[in-house]
Length: 44
Length: 259
Length: 224
Image (cartoon, rainbow over all chains, first blue to last red; front, side):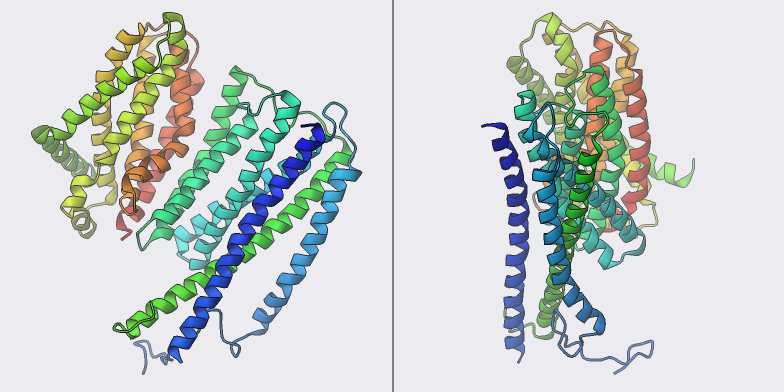
């Protein structure tokens, strides 16, 4: 791997890590929203 | 019905996440501010990326690989700031027992670990082409590794605790971990003076243009970290409200509950 | 004797008496320590010259293993008999209980170390080039560092799932500066170099963490 290859790898890894983490937040958020809908339905 | 101190008891029929009726202007501003801030951060990050890859001068000895520096160092600084906030929030929780402080502690620890992971991976990727080795027990990288270990153990405690007072236990651990940090630095510093190794990131003065790009990237990543923390905070708050709602459900109707 | 010190002494003597009478924990721990030394000796088989370089690390890793196994059963008896609830209800200060447990663990682990050390010396043909009394000082300070944090984290891990793995998981990262100091100090003394910085660091670490653990233990004890 040339120098530029390492550079690209480092930047890519950074964003992959951040995107994965944000992804977990988003998926948990949507799951929670679904749970709230279920809660509302069960009460009404 | 009245509570013992005379307050009127209202039926606690609140949905997690708030009703539309209860939206205060504060909530409204928050809902608008978040996407606006998100767009601004994205712009700032793109600008910082351009600066790092194009505008910044190429380093003489290391070449383009040195540009990893503009991602590696701001991530480290951001992680340290987040861990410091974690310490503050944990102390506040130990003294005042405010739930918000506990959420801030949890959030900053998690996001701090994410940024720390970035530092620990970009470090070796940078070291390999420059020094030919993936890892040296270099002062900064080693300290970051120990910090990462301490806060990962904090997250494990949070995940595995079956106590009802997890926030208290976690806050105690956070205080101990934060107090450990100066010892980590001192011990590794002295170890390195006795057994010198190549220093990653180089010492010495820095070209003012490089410093400028570094600071821009730091600003961009700080905003990004704030955004991520904010999202995680909202998620955690919602999660706790849902858990509370479930608890109320089972209290109100122990025989037939959804779960 | 002041009341807290009296409580500490009483609790400590009770623990020691119980251990001495039953001896099951002691016997298994002693045998475990022997096993650790033998396994290490098979894994690392250095010459006399090399052994002085690596013995510091080996010895302390072995001590760490022994300490973790000892620490894991710190609160086992209390848990089985709901002693902790009784203690929370009593007016006795939580610090006294913590000091008693820590001192008990310290004595326990020191006994194990005293058993393992001659074996290491024999298997690795160790000979200290520096002042040997300093090795004793390092042993005391280092063991205390492990034990004070270990007792605290053992109390914390009672309230977790996977209790046995939580203790080392919490203990190791925070102990890293102390471990580095212990190992470096031991290696330096064995090789006749100065260990003053490491000893001072260890002493400071002990002071700081003992104080903070004492301050925070009440919180941990009362956490349901």
